[in-house]
Image (cartoon, rainbow, N blue to C red; front, side, top):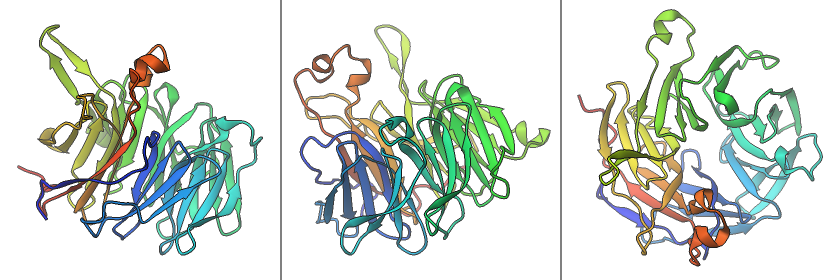
Length: 352
């Protein structure tokens, strides 16, 4: 398969904004969740089959996906429940319900992260800032904490959980002690966090923001390690008429597990590949646009564990800067799209 091959998958008509997109652990299957209560399952091993092998219409909105032992898959919902996906029967089995008034959507589970690889222990966060560590086997939280700020994004290594919050706050938890943060720090970015991903090495994490920047941070609090952190600009384009940069949110970031290089994706419709350790951009992939020329904002990305396929999820985000629904769509309904980009064997290899 050519490294420049891009395939557009079939999606339901007018699919709403994607809430999550992930490859099933150690598999070629891809899961996509959307705000119109759909869970789509694709088999990416057959390039000739672009249709989902299953479409599950759910009662509530699926927001976040994480994986447990074997092929077990867990989904966090807007109603505050965590449910396990039964692939054989394409059904959902409730594992847990966080303690809250289910009528309050601010308690929807916006992040679900496996905190101990190969186990059923998950960190679950809500829009309202509640952080709970859940053991799905006993269907109950083993630790619960109400944070001072809203939780936006989080990711985990084998030792730490990094939690990106509103007002540039970052809390870091040691898996051995969930009662209080191991560290509290201020993000190296000046504006709201859009995404957070830990290094494959476990040494630190990257944060992206709405103002076209990415910050590189390290867990080690020593002065030597902290001196290595930095931020860089990306997803900015020169407006030749105005002679100024057009700045786009960096909505999704992810690391190549094999080579530790970094993919960034933004509202400008571009995916970029970086050798972040050398502070150099290796590649900018072609812009994704609708047939009428409107930009497809990239909202979610996922990569197979062997770095062979990059999944790209786009949605129409024109509503964010519009005064009304009519103005945002211009009378045109643009649904979300999902693409697969097949990567060359050494495409993510750092260039020196």
